[in-house]
Length: 87
Image 1: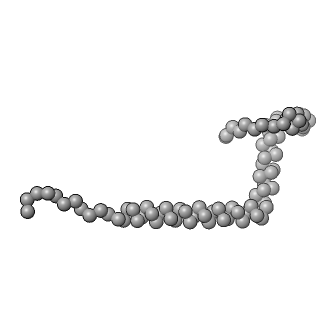
Image 2: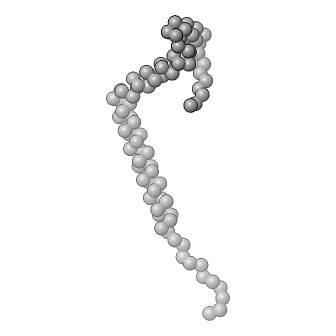
Image 3: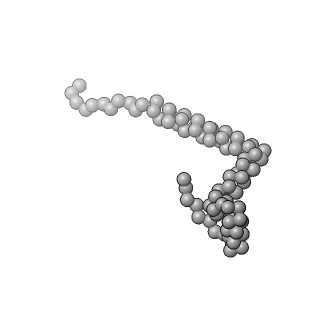
């Protein structure tokens, strides 16, 4: 679980506190519920799904580039060092 600090206008905080008390919830639970509901609403929006797919595609392209770079690095073996010595 993560801790999050937010700044609220006094009127918003007072409203949050009163509505939480009236609903029988803690302020924290009211905030969590509101965030969960808002995130569900956002996630259901078609433009968000399209942006998520675009981001996924970008992440996969970047990962493929990094894999290729690592493979090139590992497959490029340096020439063996010559020993100075008797011929």
